[in-house]
Amino acid sequence: MIHPRIILVTAEVVATMRGVAREVIYQMADGAYGGESYLWVFNIATNPERERELRFWSREINAPAATKNLSLSQVVQQIVPRREGLPGQFIGLRNWEVGELLRVPNVTLLALRGELQAVPHNGGIYVPRAALENFFARRWCYANVPTLTARK
Image (cartoon, rainbow, N blue to C red; front, side):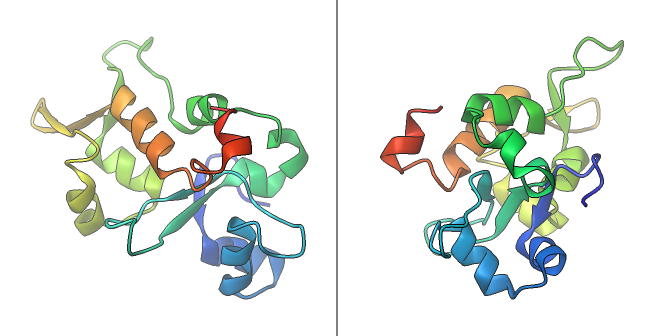
């Protein structure tokens, strides 16, 4: 079981948990593995048209039945933490928090900064919540599947 504080995981983590090869997990992400599939998968590659760097929502890995009827909007609301109600917080995440959320090194985060609409904030970099929500909507692997797109 993946710890509840970990939100997104790599294909390697899922493969290790299931005891199968990473290629099998990629097939499951494509819905092409004997009826088993993962729905809440996001391609966070710096060039998604040519590369795949998949992240799987840990809650789906831990409890698939509990997440299968959710909409993309509901999933994104759970993936991106809300803290604007706390004193001193803002609507979004700091650059390093986005890196931890996506499980990427700084060089990848730097390459994604334009798409994430990162802006300077109090001596650091801040990514607005709306930009993160749009990023996940664009990077959802099933965004172009007609029967699932309606669930947005």
